[in-house]
Image: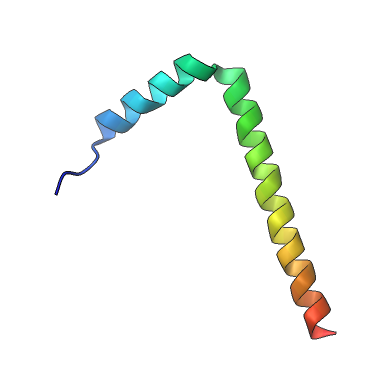
Length: 52
C-alpha cells in the first residue's frame, strides 16, 4: 500500500499556492471557516429547539 509522503503533500501545497495565490487561498479559508461556524450554530440551535 503506497502512502502519501510529506514531500508529496508539500509539493501539492506549493502548486496550489502558485495557481491560486495567497490572497485567494486566504479568502477561501475564511469562507470555509465561516460556513463551518454557521453549520455548527444551526446544529446547536436545532438541538436547543428539540429540547424545548
